[in-house]
Image (tube, rainbow, N blue to C red; front, side, top):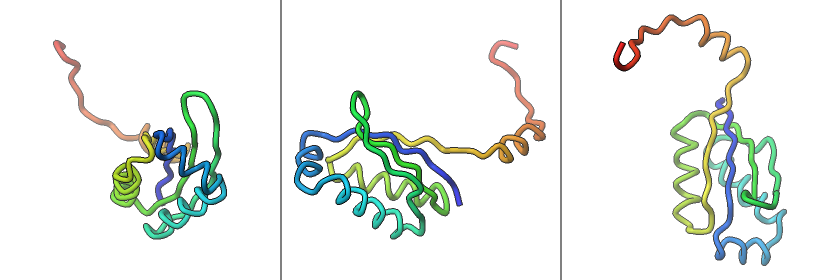
Length: 106
């Protein structure tokens, strides 16, 4: 499973929906979306300021994350960005690789 951090904000339409159904209603809807893609919601938090919500989700892969993101964005109710989260072990594996690279102008 891949882990993702989703950070987002509500549009005016989305904020009206949140007021109508509450935070637990939105969490349930999000859990249903993620489950339909074969994943789970590890954490779901609301905040205030520049961002309205923070999620950590486990999904089988990037295609499932992209499908969920596209579905939510198409609603017009949210704007979100996604961060792929890596474990320390994944970074260890990356550090052992030896990619070949030439810097621009080098």
